[in-house]
Amino acid sequence: MNKAELANRIAETTGVNRRQAEHMIETFTELVTAELQRGGEVNIAGFGAFLAKTRKPRVGVNPQKPDEAIQIDAVTVAKFKPGSNLKKALKHSHVVASGTQASATPEPAAA
Image (cartoon, rainbow, N blue to C red; front, side, top):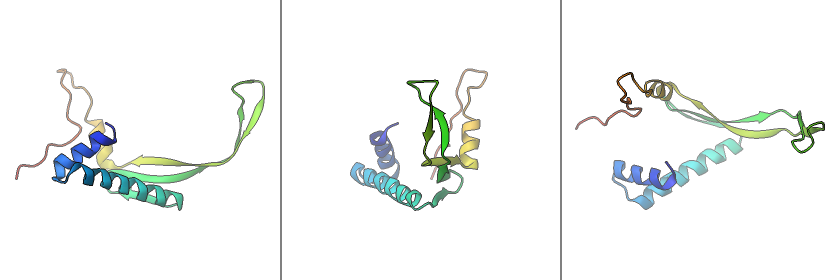
């Protein structure tokens, strides 16, 4: 699913228009990015946590000259740690013996 498809699904599910849904996605990504740049983390209970981790500097191998060592600088990378509900949903989304696939997303409750 890409950003446009996600925006369409959000619009259908929430009743907002597609432009508003796109704005929600952009706002979410901007807020998460800004928090990670500050070294913080964003936790969404049950879904997971976005966090920034710093990889230590290390010695690597030059892919163009495999016999040559190169120094790789420290770098900050984004990480995602899945939450319990996401883990549980994915664990139960495997193909069952009958050949049907269990749904990874719960059906909406009837009103």
